[in-house]
Length: 332
Image (cartoon, rainbow, N blue to C red; front, side, top):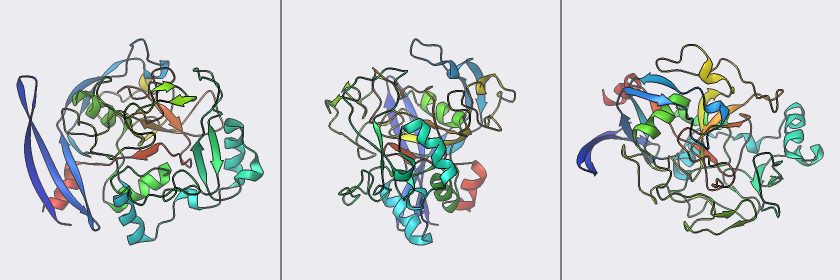
């Protein structure tokens, strides 16, 4: 694959920040990778909005790595599908045993779900709280990454928007094809915190009473183009809002109390969610256009979300990382 190294300088307050980027060909498109230098940080949070699964706060050292400067876009994912004829999870009739689990958590009829499709958002007339059943999700037999919001929707003209309606398996398949990986939770949070991603930065989230009325003060009801809002200090876009992003880790509420958390932690060996103990889940990070101050505030750098890896949602995408060794293969 062809590549081009660019060194750019940005100014933050009174000091200069060097941003190193490598542009990699992804089929007939490009992906820009940003260098995240090594360092230590405090993972987790004890702020007033934090959840118990964000604790205990602990020190972690991270080796340097490369991260895509934005979530993977429709154009990039299209290249993957066109080159490999890949079929996403939402385009395959789901297995009955997995649907039985999802039925209990989404209040959906089993017979309605034994078809290809995925979950789409529907406004609900009751304001949400942390214990609300998620009645704003509806199964759509016509929804997938090419039709993210069901019948009548399309990604035509949305090449530079993040791909959504992709499962964890779809995200892994793209990453492996591109000779990359999904970030670990630690890599993702480190890049957000080292980049000084701020909660008050302009971002695409829900404004108004969730899930009743979105005032759309940021200009977008759904996803935004990946370069619409300002990047963080490391040059990473949409590390808060727009779409939730799959990471490699299994979800476990006590992950931060487990061993081997000192350097480059890779997360638990298995999943456990006490709210739905029969369903294995992976973690997503970063929040989305459906996050609000009133409900989940998932755009916080330490916030964790949990989803079964075979689930596709209209507000969930991903970004990729590469190790130094992986990048060197491109630069040889």
